[in-house]
Image (cartoon, rainbow, N blue to C red; front, side, top):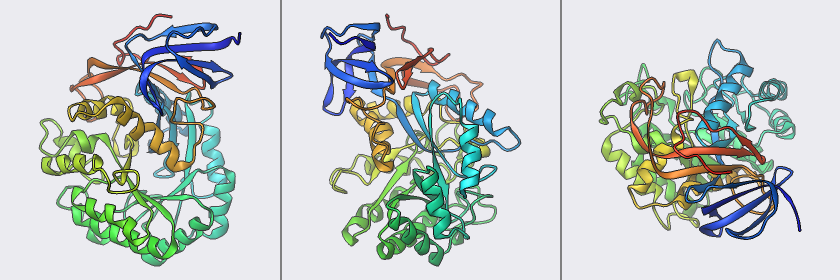
Length: 419
């Protein structure tokens, strides 16, 4: 009988076929078998989580990593530690703000070297600048970037300047030829006030105008486009309608836009750190309605992914608590762990073509997260992010990255599985 390197069992495994009692056999860092909970599966190490859930490791798209004035390799290590505390096993790093910005193959190599030893899988987005040409984009793609990112305002400032409409169309046409995805920070610079910090200076109309520009350009160029972050719920109908005019447009939002608003007690200091800012409570509720919409696109809502929005360069530290924050709000709306896994793991991996990530299935990387959905945790009041002092539902336990069990993250878990 086959002996596995390790086996992880749970009565609540979130697999593509559904949620149920299963055993996951791991060999050489990959999932080699998924069988019944009680199936005999000899292994050198067996972990029985019992009623604690087993999720696919989250894939965080567009993670900000670099902190100004700090060593790049140290920033990747800190981001990796925060990711593991939050159940994220794959980071897809934003190209900017960063020094150097990932806008050419040479800069990408600098980041690839700095990311060695991060502790999680790291992929990269390539930055599209005003001067990016076909060869620059092709070189970045060949060197390993999984998708590209641009901004219509200050989404990559100061390292990625805003694109105008001809530049946006040109980039989309070139990326369509490369069969890759363009992520867009869609706030229109012309609609932002001065200084562009408060909600009044970053109105929802900036997102609407930006999305209109994105749809017009994508309609001509035929590029697959993902708006991130999507925050203005009043634009949901525009997002959903893009498919009717032949535009492959989807979007990503963030847990802090779904969990907090400008009116949430204690959230005011963070309202202006987030870009776009935290909006009204009515907008937050409507954003949930847009995320949960059925039939808006062939696969449901056009908001397909939820990412942490972690952006230390702006003082926004969210990576370690995003999964629990999202679950806290989602379970209150009657959603289940399958939704959580789809938003944070399956859909992001599918968007970027990361075929071995985001699923608990034979042949996939053994990136797994123990998650206790009922245990409540209080975020330390000294935490540097917007969830400081808040009580959240759901705690992250042991994490496996490519089959390697990572020690239990401090201050996050409330479970101690038996091994």
